[in-house]
Image (cartoon, rainbow, N blue to C red; front, top):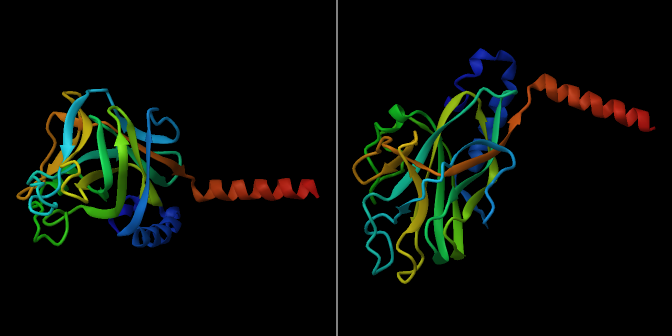
Length: 255
């Protein structure tokens, strides 16, 4: 399984293969998760982030022809970001949430943002042929490995510069020292609702933002999404064993 492509370098990590396979199977197509909106920047258990406060407005759009009238939609409809996870202190990471920064004040009513996460590089992603109404998935033509998809309901006023966190129903188990990406789509529930979801980007600071249109999976330009990946490192099996032994010894002392 591609998510574990580096595990051959660590033969004692085979325990992660089974747990990741089961977790990934459970995560794909999962139910709506929680959305947390806050004026406070995420700061706990951040395993990677990118937010130089560029304050450039960008938007997620519904795909042309899929939104309730009179919303038209846009052929350039999905936006996302490539990111890499470092060589951690254990065997991998558990991703529990992804946050972006809101641009503009908008009020929503049972509208949907869908989050997608994959493993792979820009080169593997940009072989894609785009996404249309007739497409079977958002990954046609790519050679990346889809890891996760989850729909989130957005409701009420979300203010400019708010931090919008999508809390995953099931954490994603991923390998360290690997390349990944996430992207988002927006679907309004009513024609009277906002025709787009505004979010914040930055310019000329090494960003890795990409887009998906009806004809291509685009590569990075000069922009980057403001984002935060929340999670924890997964300890080596030996560390887990030591923790268990420590707990057992403590329990014995309390008898």
